Length: 112
Image 1: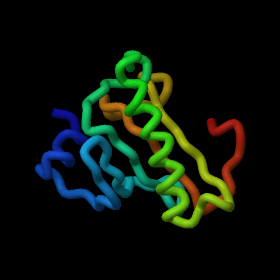
Image 2: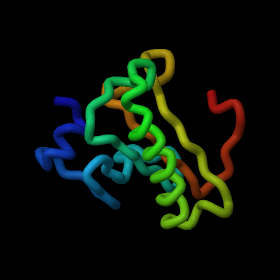
Image 3: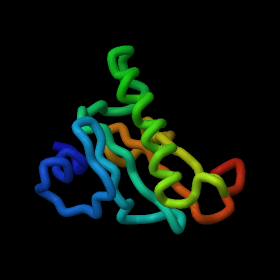
């Protein structure tokens, strides 16, 4: 089981902000911004590079939930960043697709 599967199964504690049948939203334990939350599909998809057309609905729901979460956290108006890491060179550390939602400070480009 991945770390996220263990959190979803309540085998590992986490600060959960919201949850439904398909997604869980939680605080990142190593925040890179004043606001840094993770949106994780309950269906394990190893990485974005391995998503299939059947995963399209949950991928769309991830983005819409990011929008909703940004509004709820008060960063929708000032701006936020959405990140999905895929593969070793993409910075992936957990082989379970998830979306990072970051905000609360000015970001630069390129991210590095």
